[in-house]
Amino acid sequence: MSLYAVHVRRVALALILSVSASCWPRPPGVRSAAVLAAGTTEVGELGGAPYRIDIPPGWNGGLVVFFHGYRGGPVRFDARAPDEMAQTYAPLGYAVAQSGYSAGGYAVREAVGDAAALRAHFTTRFGQPKETWISGHSMGGSITMMLMETQPTTYDGGLSLCAPLGPMIGYTKTLAFDPLVLFEYLFPGHLPSPAHVPADFMTTLERTAKLEKALDANAKASAALRRFTNAETNKALAMNLDLFTYILGELARRVGGNAFDNRDTIYTGTGDDGAINAGVKRYRADERARALAISIYTPTGRLVRPLLSVLDVSDPLVGLYPSDRYPEIAQIAGSGELFAQQYVRESGHCAFTPQQVRSAFEELRRWRRTGERPPPGAVP
Image 1 (cartoon, rainbow, N blue to C red):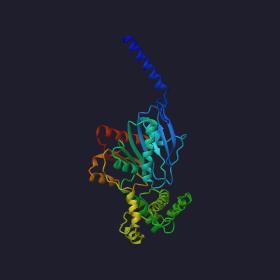
Image 2 (cartoon, rainbow, N blue to C red):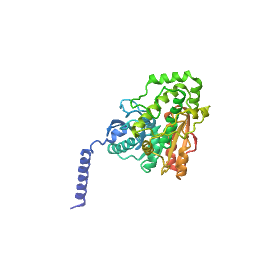
Image 3 (tube, one colour):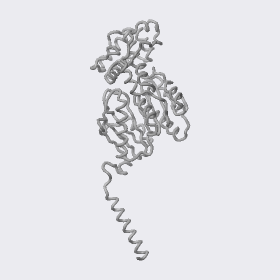
């Protein structure tokens, strides 16, 4: 056979393969390159967990897996409505995947499993991301810390936002149980015992208004409670107290009883610590419930990749929890150089602008790329 004939046969074969490839169906569900280039939003449900995926036009191939904070039930997504996190990361070219979790409350374990299913679904639908980051608000920020410790090579880095980083049982006692113990002493009869919240307790606007009215009626006692909790107004304090009561009730149902013990707690910063410590009720934890609550997660501080935490300067929900708790844990574990903490000069819980979140994320990306740890202090 002549060289010319061989060449003709090769060209013909190449054309046949090219046509066949263009006609061959893609694996079920896989999106085309044209669709991905234009951007897309997908909502659905995986194993009982609602989810949302946003891919911006001109997607850079990177993914941010985002975890929401504490909610009473699974979060539902509307593809027709704009999404805050998608809009935050779109200018940087990143896709965002969010699970609404298959359960409400302290759904930490559910969130971990739901996120794994969502990542697998994302890869099946859109391909393996070039890089994958993790972030979360409030309880979602604590889950971010947890996954950076327990799945050290799954994510390129973690961005924890407005989260109390420490043992779950520790920050729940500090932020919810202890303020309600003081409220029970200062304002008896307005809320159920923090150790025995009825199963049907739900937060209501009507109750919040009544709590605010009670706080307004006793200026001295409410001032002591605001001083202890760092709440700026009685309105904010009333909302927190109602929410904290629900949270303690939900956790008690999850672990089978009261997990908190304050028999050896010394309350300080009230303005009258002697009277407070002599007068508050002392509760003994149910040991089995306490053990189950501890098992939800207690941080080790062991990190392999960078974790950046960003807090609000004045946060009415988590501001009372010591911000140096996790830096100490990481330092003791030998991972101090892989944790950094910054803040924004805002008042409120998770009161970040999209630009502030993007700036913090850029700090995290630069850290991963160059090894240069972000400086402490305000977010650039």
